[in-house]
Image (cartoon, rainbow, N blue to C red; front, side, top):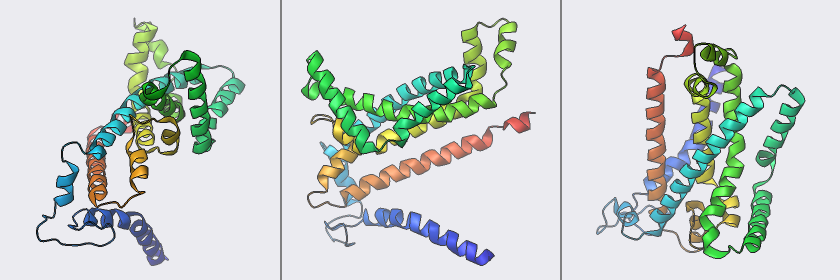
Length: 273
């Protein structure tokens, strides 16, 4: 039975990570085809990486757009979600808090295409009312849309951490002379920091990866990477796209290694006690 479990686990990991390995290998192909690995004499193995970083490459511009949008929307969603989680945590009525959490789950359960189309109609309606249309709304409509669908995830990451904290910490800090605001930032925030960080990372990942909602709320002057790639695959694609994805994958792996190293050096709550 043990060997069967190991075989199944190996097949699962092979199924998950084999495409990533193939993508990285094909990023060093010298040919113009994405399905055949070729070695071309007059092209170095890093040819497509060189092409990727050429001046004026729209892929890099769209990558920067996605990173910029992801960071800004994740920061706003983290602040809103943390404040909302604190508000829900401090509610005395269990029925009211359950109702708020149910409403919070609607954007997560709602199909993305429904959210994207409804937000597109909302932005068009508001834009006509206030006289703001066209390219001026590109970044801001995307930002509002991404904050809207990522905030519920932040709330669900922060709220469990609040429930794990000692409810008397705030009172003890205020008894020692802290104002309510100072007690919150000095005592409560350090306790729920892992949940805030997890919520920020999830919000950034959702924003960076989103296609459906971005497709319906973007314009012509500000395109995210998923939307640009969708338009790009209508014509022949070169291994340049594999080079970009390989760099993104390497960046994620580096972040995971750094995060695990920092977590390993940080003493746990159980050890402190």
